[in-house]
Amino acid sequence: MLKPTKILVPTDFSRFSVIAYRQAIDIAEQYGAEVHVLHVVEEKVRISIYEYDMADKEISPGSIKRFEGRMRKEAEGRMIKFMNRHPPGDKVKVVSHVVKGTPVTDILQFQKDKSIDLIVISSLGHGALAEYFIGSVARNVLKGATCPVLLTKS
Image: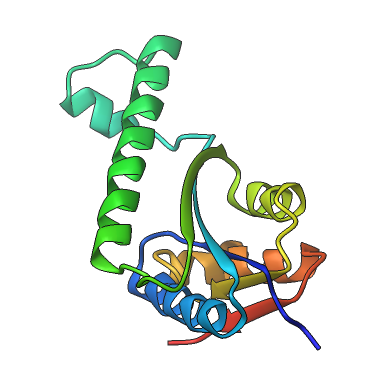
């Protein structure tokens, strides 16, 4: 029988990932597990030429690096707000992480590096329509994980 000790909840800060987080907290309370909340800031930043034209900025490696830095800081701020809005209570240890990379790859690597024994992930996120056409992070995590994955629905 599965008795998780470390649970991973990947988040994009959507309301769907809040559902997965709450489910993970409930499981963690039952088994005395710790919860790791992970947000991956995409490494390959999709920058619109239009945005830079409107901002009167030149696209250069330095400006892209600064933009990526702002994205990471914003994600760290969103993680703090996420954790403050959804406190786990006194029974569960929760650790938050923000990393830069590729969501599926980094979620799966995190699972291996931290010896995660359960991933709780939402079947939907911010880009539900885009994921339908491009490929779902949840689906690819489900296929690539070496531990059980609980796929939550809204």
